[in-house]
Length: 208
Image 1: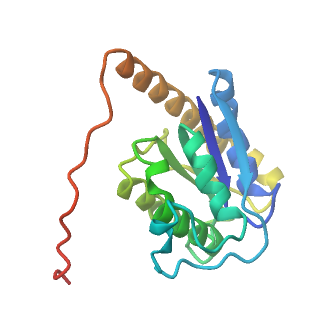
Image 2: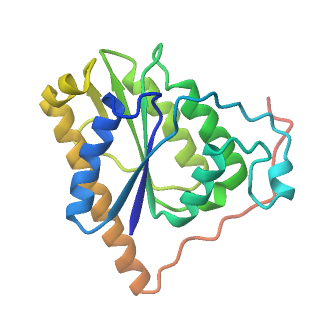
Image 3: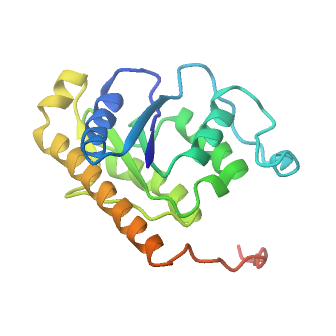
């Protein structure tokens, strides 16, 4: 089993990374491999809805390294943690651009795999940011993992985040809950319980 943790901050070892690293600890303790993928500080273009990813077999036509790498790694992962800093009570624009394109082109690589969102802030805007990221999970039929409180840490530096003892506890409990769900899914598979087959084809486009 493997969890891909996506660092949506431009800083590779900042507050968001610190939170993700704490989530990874109980996962590793439960024998689950983890990888923290930093999406980097280079510009990431938005999805333009061109639809070419369909004809390309689930690959984004704009090959700027990170999005297609996320899609590829998503196919190899069993679960996901999306981490973001809070900018103006909202996730970083960079993680939204990556996820818009990754889910548009490669949603099948995420389907039915557990996911969770983590937000890091100096003070406020965390719950709104988590809500935005949770929407990706719910459109891809992914179980959403919770913790003992909302999945957030507070601090302006990694050192301050580590002093947020409740936040660190939340990250640990999040990792434990994800590890537990993995075990439940594996037990279900052993009993012959497969992922549900979704109804498709109906789009009520006239609703405004």
